[in-house]
Length: 332
Ligand code: NAX
Image 1 (cartoon, helix red, strand yellow):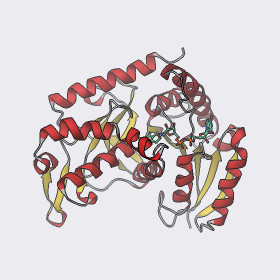
Image 2 (image 1 turned 30 degrees about the vertical axis):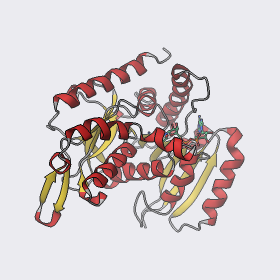
Image 3 (image 1 turned 180 degrees about the vertical axis):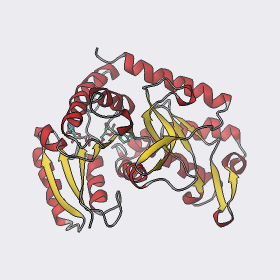
């Protein structure tokens, strides 16, 4: 049996974690032979709830769960971790300005970025989920800069990708598994850019025959005026219906993101991850920006040479501008 992987979930007493930790313990993130030790961090006032989560993990009797470290102490939480799922963040309360939210979260991610640098395994793979996810990842990466490479850091746009894939599958009338290479570019926010220019429907994968999504949908007006805004606003639609924000689907997206990063994407398939820009597609270096990527041997690489239409380029410019303004608004 391989050695257990140490996985930290921050915000472990929250809603997303309540789905996520059980998916990890059951082997969905790293496969059915890989044991895990779960590190669970939340803030002191959530200690009792955290204890309850541990009780339920124990009650799951998961064969792959080699241990749990439930704590409200940052050092204990980050010690020796190989995977870091940063779900915990300060929620936006009534009457709170976006700038207040940025400031509260900047402090959390600065502290936790420094803890990564000090205590985590050098190869730690970091996924930031807590919003504003891209900018929080930027802050954590910056705080760890002297000790950890920026390629260790990412933020979640996989939920947006999954939402887009599901909408295309429904529109075309095919199973979701046949829809490949839908991309999400930019910020995980209303300016995100769902893009099907390079996406395909796999009709007969055994023969390698594919149909471009643009051909299968054959309705640019629907793509531009319905599909894109529906993906962008899906989070709000779930809140309106459930009276709570997306949680189980977010956990599922987190599992998919990390599984692909660690175990690799399939040949010819791309997934979207927000990562530190290396200047690809003229996105300013250093911004945490969602790109289509492929993963091999535990490393992601941005897919190069994709066609960008003028319509999509305008949207890339807008999401880039928004990300830059989030960074400009950070406390200095
Ligand atoms: P909850 O409010 O249910 O849980 C968050 C937990 O984080 C709470 O238990 C809180 O005590 C804890 N926390 C706060 N500060 C902390 C700190 N400094 N250290 C450790 N824990 C801390 O939120 P939940 O619904 O689980 O969502 C978590 C975050 O994910 C939110 O910021 C949310 O906006 C974000 N989301 C991001 C998504 C994405 O695609 N990137 C989608 C889902 C989700 O909306």
